[in-house]
Length: 179
Image 1 (tube, rainbow, N blue to C red):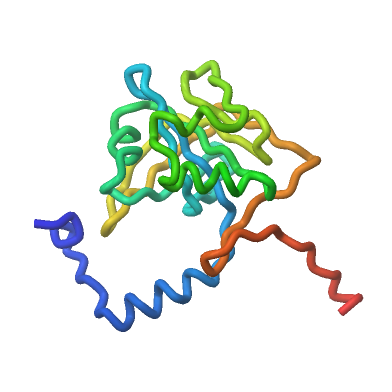
Image 2: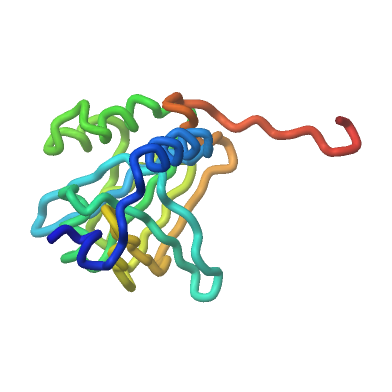
């Protein structure tokens, strides 16, 4: 029995599922690399399903497909990191999306080991280290809740975004008075 069936979730009809996928491609998303370390082995993957959850306590959520290795790691390890890539780090995203073997992904760029054990991208636009507080399965994914234990950011970089299967960078909108 699939996880979706076990939760009593009816699969979406193909036309709705296809339309939803096409619509979600139009939702611009910040590109991140989520990383963890288990038994001395580092792993990371590119993800865009990351968002803040609460300011009190400071926390965020990440959503991972339940068929990924990182998903299995996060069910076992107590902490993980989220590194927000800059608009100059599309190659890092590509590497962590599967174009580089998992054991070599941290060889590129300036990854450093955080005092809590996982790798964090030193030149990231922002980074957040979290303690896993919960894991909620839903459909093909699990929502991981992370309470923030450390964070840093750069005021001199721009975040890498992904929209409609392309990398992009945000442009600041004009104030309403200038439209």
